[in-house]
Image (cartoon, rainbow, N blue to C red; front, top):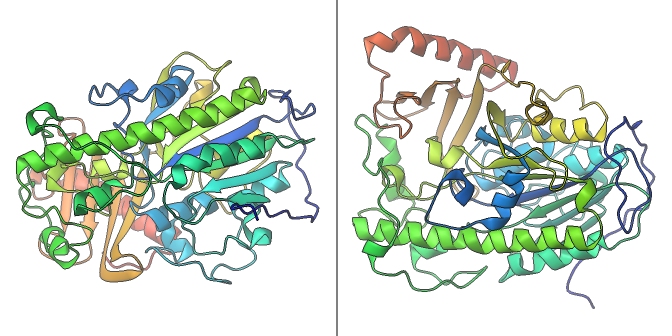
Length: 463
């Protein structure tokens, strides 16, 4: 019996009328007006953890290759910096609280109603042959193809060496004979194994060497220290969850070892991304495939003496987001539009497919940035969090609104619940302006925007 699962759904699906675009002449496909789409996702990778972003402490040639022939969105943010909630948002185009998925939930039959439009189902209806390989982490069963719409779905259960087998499974999908374009998700786990490294546990995806002496490791971040006036519960949370935050009291050299290991894990997953791209080329699809690359959320990586995610600082929320066409894309372009990777993925995929996004979705297509036009009509971007250990909530939530320059954060409990940062002059978020009278008007503006967003999305959290 093969170790993988191949599930085939024989039910018919309607297709949207294709619009003129890129043909998909590949070895295994007939002509179509719709492009193939490959969606690659890593786990817990911060936006700056790529060498093309100027980070000299790691080498990511395959991610850099995507950037060289694509558009990098430098202000892309996850909807919630936690695996399950973020993935629920990405796969539905709605905020985690709208999907009742604000903590890491187990798979449960019937958790979402049958009327929920999941990414695979949307792309299948648009005329695509759908596949999903790798980490799942959604509150709906992998086996419920009628709901999620991915006909080829495999390698979704976390196990040792899972990342290493994802390229081969993607290759199996790409070798299939097909008469329609494909939509394939390749969902990797690393650099998530930095969590095991921090706890001193054996890594699951790949082995790495013992870190060198700390003076040969990446330097400490400029924003290493805890900002003055930080909400009090943040450090209290660390004491409540030593499994997630074993870094309390770490000396500086341990943080440097952490960064060294984190970057090695990013390099490991970059290698597997390269193998997926190689398989794409081997099967004749390189010329005719749009590639979208992102991560579910980032990692503290020592900033503010934090590891992990959940907090609403930049390191945990700002994620890589690249749209690339490896043979026909423009030379490297950086776009500074505000992108929400939870809301904007499905609209982007629908745009490339030549169809309209579901009317109830409020995201925007990032193809505007690729075309050289603007996404800047989005004035604000919103994020949320609920502090939890797996499915166990600690009962503390947070909300953030980010404009082009300023970012306002507010938490539901504790002392000093608010933070306001000028990200132009203070990108490391060290100087809280929330009590500064000179910024009272800006703070009030952001609070109004946040309250309006809460009303529009039926967010019941009282902040």
